[in-house]
Structure formats: C-alpha cells, structure tokens
Length: 499
Image (cartoon, rainbow, N blue to C red):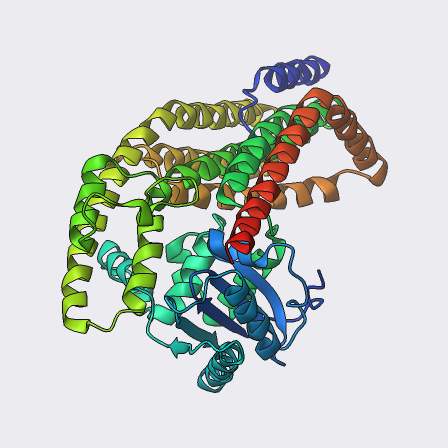
C-alpha cells in the first residue's frame, strides 16, 4: 500500500510539473434596474439607459464623436432623461455637431413599456432646446442608413436564426450595443429578452471608461492577455500541487480545476484578440474600394469628407458621412439609387476584408492545437489515477474524462472549417469558466479552512513574484489611458476652436 501511495505522489508531482501552462487569464444611480434604452444619432451617437422613473442610469458615446461630446461632462448620470437630452443637444450645438447643415436627430426608444410616450418626450425636448439656440431641428424615428444596412446584412447572414429574423431595427440597436462589448455574441444577444438585454447594456455602459477609445480597448485587451497568461501559469496549478502532497487520492480535483481554468483563460484571451481583428468596419479601405464608394456617392477624386480623425477611410467613417448626408437630404428618389450603389460598394469592401481576416485567423490554429493538447495532457493525468482510487471515485473520474474529451473535440471543431471566430472561441471559454467555478466550489468544500488559507497564501506569493509582468501591464494600461485621454481632449478642443 505504501508503495502505491508514494508511486501515486510521484506520478502526481511529475504530472503537475510537466503540464503545459497554456494561457490564462460618476453616480451610477446605485443598483437601479434598466427598463429603457434611448438613442440619439446626430452624429455623434449617444445611448442612454433609464430606470423606471426615467432617470439616466448610464450614458455612452457609441462612436468617437459620441465620446468626444461626452468627455469630461457631468450632470447626465442621475438626471431625468429630458434634462439629459437637453444637455446633450446643447453640447452638440456648442461643438458644431448640430448646425444648419445637420438639423436631423434620429431617435429611438426600446423599453419594457410606454416606449412611444417616452420617445415623444425626448423628441419634444430636443427640438425645444435647439429652438432656444435659434436652430430648427427635426427628430426622425427613421433609423440611420448604417443601421438599416447592418439590419439587412445580419438577417441575410443568419437566415435560420428565428430570433435574428424577428428583430426590429430598434432592438437591433440594443443587440449591436451588447455584442460590440465583446462579451456576448450577436446571436446570444438577439436571443436574449429585452429586459435582460437592457440590464446587460446598462452594466456594460457603466463599466466602460469615458476615455475608452477603440485604440485604448485594443491596447488594454492586449495587456490583459499577456498578464492573464502569466497569472495563469503561476497560479492555476497550485491546487494540483497542493492536492498532490496533502490529498493525493483527490488530486483529480486540482487537475480538473487547472484544466478548466487554464483552458478557459487561454480561449478568452484568444477570443478578445479575434474580436478586434474581426472589426472589419474599422479597417482602412484600399484605393479600389475607396474609388467604388466615391463613384457611388458622386464625390469624384476629393474624398476628404470620408476620412476619420486619423485620416483613414473605413467602412465606419463612410457610414458616418452617409448617415449625415442621407438624413439631411430631401431628394428621396435619387437618394435611394445612391444608397443602393453605396450599399453594394460597402458590402463588397466588407466581404473582401472579412475574407482576409478569416485567412489571417488561421495563424491561430497552432495556439488552438496547443490548448487541445493541454486538455489531453490533463485528461491523461486524471486517467492515471483510475487504478489507484476507490470504485466510487473511479465513477467520478470516468465522467470527468468524458467531459475533457468532449471539450477537446469542441476545441478541435473550432479549426475544422478553416476559420476561427471570436464568437465560437468565446462560447467555449464561457462554458469552461463555469466548469472551473463549479470545480472550485468542490475544492473549497473539500479542503478545511486552514488548508484553503494555505493555498491562498501560496497563490498570493505566486502573484507577488510576478512583479515584472505586473509592472509591464500597469505601464501598458497607463500609456493607453494617457494617449486616449489626450486624443479626446485634442479632438474636443479642436471643435471648440472651430466654433
């Protein structure tokens, strides 16, 4: 028996040491529940979520101009929605977003009840505020060209998804707002009921930094990924090592937790990398694509109006120009013809960029295969315990081995179709994260309070040893934050100076 015990200890120690350490991981109105979502598309694009008393729980700049308008502004969170839209309207006028060349504000409301009444109040306040500045503004319930183009494309992309086919343009705005956080897929958002979606979007808005530009979010995600991998390598295997020494017969607890947790973190980090790579609307267009857009819009060679603040022409910057152009135009018949030509040019450009993105995603196949192999190694470590534990434990191990086998197949399927997407990787990551949390609960009920404290102390020591990784993480985030704040400050000052 002693020989068996020490053989088991040796096996577990070797397993723990040899396992691949693949990747890791203003007043907000208290906890008020969001019951309504209000959008104002000027451009800028501004989103609000409201509580049952029509007080603003969150406000969010849904594009760069929206962030510029809201940057360093206060008095919106906690205000009545009418006061909030009054402030935003005044800011839009002060910064030159609303002027004699741009007099249409597209508004929409998605709410659990009384949406039409709320929309009437919002529209009345916007027009009255603009009139007070001697500007005649119209509020239009028609959705922006860019949203309607997305609406058609998304329905065409998911012909068999009943939830997406049943979407209205108003709810689509909410769905897009949720999916653009990178935390939920478009399909999952579409399948969520309005109440849950409102809460999700409201929480995401509250968590977002006012300076969270696209560049900041990319830099922050990259820094998070590097640091999370370091943390995972240092911490996730500690339960395995602890069980190896102190509770070898239950060591599969530690191994299972390590397998679930490290794989969950690896997949989450990869999903965030893919999420930013897949944002085709933010990729600069090539000369041929720009020429097609220019021809559709009748701009000729002067395409400066299509450029964003970086001097690039992207699908997003073209849509911003088109939204403003179309909503302020009165020539309906000619407009439809221009829209059709522009839609064809943009769809073609997006498809070309998306094809290149899909091809580029193949470079992550090796990383996916490493993750799959780490799962197999973990499973092998657990399987080696089968003949050394009681029959009752064998049953649990058999179930666990099947689970790891199923997960390995899911991971393998990610690369089977020749492309790797953020949504499918995120889905696996979310599932594994739930499993790791369930396993951790078992561990916490299995170990004594003193033993848990020992493990936590070991984990803290491991974290404390990551001084270089933490310092690099802090430096990267601080740099990204400083640059984002300066950018928004500069853009806002430029608009003020032009007035």
